[in-house]
Length: 246
Image (tube, rainbow, N blue to C red; front, side, top):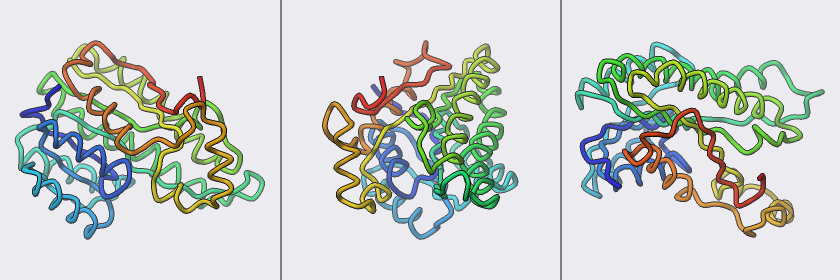
């Protein structure tokens, strides 16, 4: 599996799953454009990728702002001449029980987690259609199919990504572009590390494989979907959850 000569954009690329995805794609030969709101962390990851021999461009951008998304994709194409892979990973949580959820909490999560995916996908389609090739990989979640108390906003956004992925796949398949979604379960990130140890153990006990996933587990699947080996896969949701949901 090689991505030599391919140019990838990874949103939310400054930490966690996004950072792991960028690292694995770079290892497979891809050139990486990283996007996030924290410039310091972005440049740190870009430097790490360059130390591995990869080309990397760090672009500070807010995926909820269409103008910044367009500028980010434009910077990628201007620097590297093309964009072959888009990984929509940027996301936030603002957890609360539905009865107590504030409009701001709902709007913030839907704006980043769903509207951001829409805006990045829309921006990248023009160069991909011109190339008549491309891979769009959207990060959804196991909770999109299971539900989760206290996360109505997050669940709604992640479920929306599944629908958006399928609609995108049908619209652009004739142009040689695929669109798929990856639905991770509980993954070892800053978010899960911050949970109470007892709660972590309760969550782990529900997973048949008996452990949380690693960011690299997700990244390896994304790299496969970005490669030519996945050329006949589109419109699919691939679950990566250790058996939590079957």
